[in-house]
Length: 106
Image (spheres, rainbow, N blue to C red):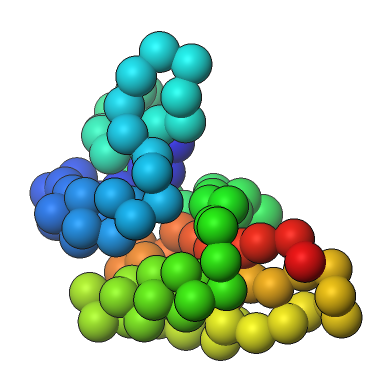
């Protein structure tokens, strides 16, 4: 769960970013909850927390990274090969500072 600002201003962009990943609500499936914190305190990005989305191809990662930036995310590591032949990923931060990663092993 990512704690998003109280006005839920990011719900449409998240809904727009996620469909290509195949992530849809349902029992036993990954979920992203966009809601107010349970304790009613001010929402803040988790320190050291990253939401990672596995992808099918490097091209999908490139597209997700580009789309996230178009929707207001900031660059936190452009799409690229991180570990030769082992890990390809892209990193962004949403406007509330939550860190997202789109990745594939290989």
